[in-house]
Image 1: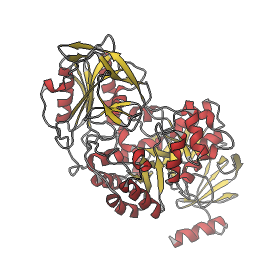
Image 2 (image 1 turned 30 degrees about the vertical axis):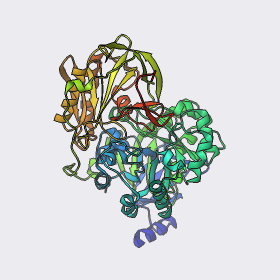
Image 3 (image 1 turned 90 degrees about the vertical axis):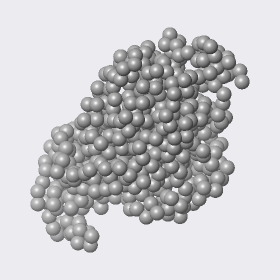
Image 4 (image 1 turned 60 degrees about the horizontal axis):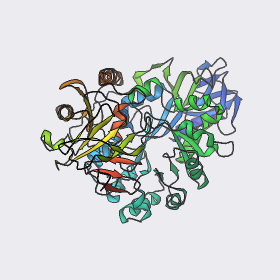
Length: 577
């Protein structure tokens, strides 16, 4: 370390030549919001100086622009269905050199083993993966997930050099009521000098005081201008999210002003492999924000230095002496057309091609992670008995993880709910899959538009029980049984025939395949599901996976039953009870 440090100082002072010099580029200065000129002198993995430098080798940038390596401030790697290494490959192609991840998906399935698995699999990658420890496993007390994590379980992980703090605190009632375990987690994080992430979905301005008083310093759940302004007013960093389902950027961007922009940052939260490849990560946020009228340099700040400062990460997020040599060479700031990506002073992406020699050979052994473990059930157990035809119904809002609370007239025959493709009122089922409890939640959902068949997945945030939606019980059961055969994943069935299956054998959440193979599998799955006649305006699988997330408004279904976020309680499905 000392020799590298001294070498960098000597290069900065021009007593030694730089390892590499980048010449003739316009550099985005994220501190001043301006463009600046000068050679970039690189020493090992860091920037030694900006000015007039000589190097052992040099690159002529030919008038292109240099911006810092991008940072995704909040992402669940598991939602991409990729291992950390494959995820890293995709992000680097899009100029992301640092990702701050919360492994609470796999932690809800496998507890501390899941966290350790993600730490081990993300070690030594040419993408900096920094970890926030899951705060709410389970998401709410008594949720039917695979494990429970308490403060004592998390404490040893705070010694890990890539652990930054406590991830999204989604159990607001436990904070509000000063639950002993939640208070212990918050204090543990503060004593470890860690950051605490928020999750203030549906929380009003007055209640946000509790979050802020607890030392929570950011939130990614704002969906309206008022919610965005409330968070900024009370001192929280505003995370503007644009993922596969939750697309909040256009709604929130007008809140960003010249005065408050440095307190705003971009995140993806949950994004599927096909969207990551087609659109990108936070690079897509930058392009979209610019298209909506935001100044390009402001947009770049929101994906670089702002995120670094939010997480108190010195040495990343800027092209500046003493900072890591993580940067992009782009043709234009508006299009953010990436020509090269440098990580730790080495070119890792050139003209859209990864230099794979910088990745180590890695195996994805996950034998110590739990398999699907649901209790066998009979077809009649999927029936939904009703005495009334007026029911509480979950209304899907396209491209949102928030749902509507509807009251609808439904078809009832012989005291049993009958799905209706004409009215788009389908059966929704959640099957507990961790401890063979036999719990099966049954509900009604509107908005998928399926004309036949069913789909099922072992990805259901945050407890990751099995969730399925369909037009009839027979297809729903077949889709669920196929999940057991492949140890988790995604399945689709039509008229008694399996039409598509995507295995996710790592905890029922993650593929053991390359990103290219997973992408092909996902495309094939999407094509087959079109046979069901659903709507094309949103992704049905990712939408389905959020319909059991009880900490998000408004109406959700768990294996216990129908949950009303506004009451934070379970309710009867019949509206007149």
